[in-house]
Length: 395
Image (cartoon, rainbow, N blue to C red; front, side, top):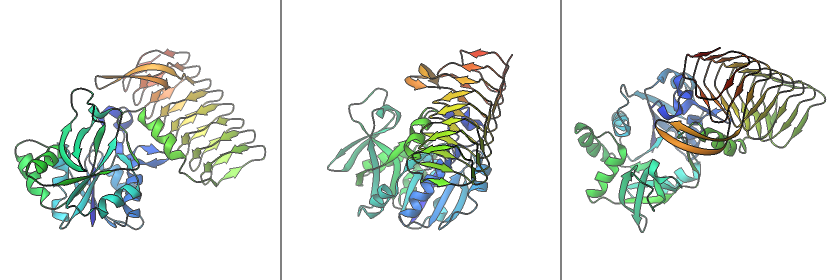
């Protein structure tokens, strides 16, 4: 059996984080989301994967040129019209039953195995969620799909949704071609049409499935996945460093004396931490990043090539690739209402979302829930009380 992974989209709701890389390549516990999907598929016994790419496809194809135990074929969706259209690009590479997954969801091997082993010609993974209106809401009887309604306008009492992970027969492509020829590019619509044609689709409850829909979702999912990363102490750890819990430190990384690190914490390769820096649980620091003395980081994602000045405080925040902060930088954590693509979400504990390649001066404070776009310059001594769009300067 082969797997088709849909990885062509940008992830507009995740801007500015996706302005420099596709959603599937954003790091969770220092590993691209797509890497977790590859692992789950491989561990379920599938060794052939067709990956549908589009937006910033070179980033994906370069990173996953080879993947141990998997033969990878890339097909390109030139225009990101929708999931059904994306699946259609893989048609010529599939000649038997196959599974289809989204490259931007975390899924586990056990769930995929249950899907594969189900005897039905068509089957799908479903999951309960408190926010069903964001997804395709599932109505089922005796584990057989009766109706799939994509993003209903209000909160439906039914809490089970489609994960977008299916086992399908190649006959599905007839329905896909018919739908796309009429301008309907949604895979959910194709599945609903299949039900209306009288075909039975089994519903299977997924064990682990996490969707990254908004920037703040990265923090909760990073927290969950950090617990799965084993302790590994590479690099150079000086005397006087305190390590507690599960801590992973990459090669050629130096942890200077006086640092206090409480896991789960993941620190990548080629980093410099401290002296006397404090890193607290659920923090992931990417490769070649520098945390200067007396800084404190809590429950945050710090991507590759980030420099954080001394005496800084970062909590419940995401910092994009290549950004630099001067000394005494603070991302305040607290309650905030955040707006993304016209949607408003009240959050209890949120810090800042900082895009890639930002230059932030010393003594800058960012209020809770504020989003800083890519390539922004924030001059010293500023307090940021509203979102800053990409390529802006605040002096």
